[in-house]
Image (cartoon, rainbow, N blue to C red; front, side, top):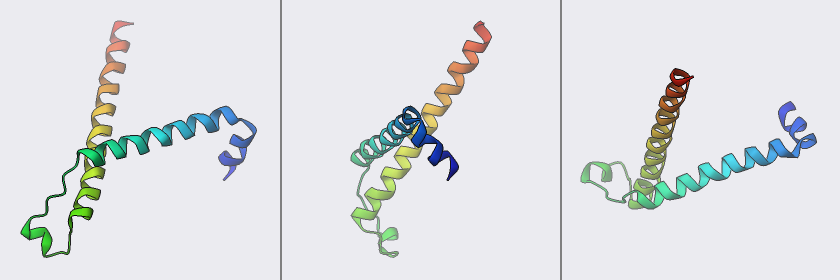
Length: 84
């Protein structure tokens, strides 16, 4: 709760946090648009419909994107450390 109170005194940090949340939401909508809505007979036994399949697929694809971005960031950081 205290960081939220401190961010009111510093609106610049609140703006950066808002942009981060907005970027993650935009990434989810991109992943949702890329995900498929196919349902196999195995999933039908558990009442999984096309909407739920697309919803879960969106989160999985977003997780893959975030994993790839973090690995690329780690590699770039290590190369920068080596070159210095």
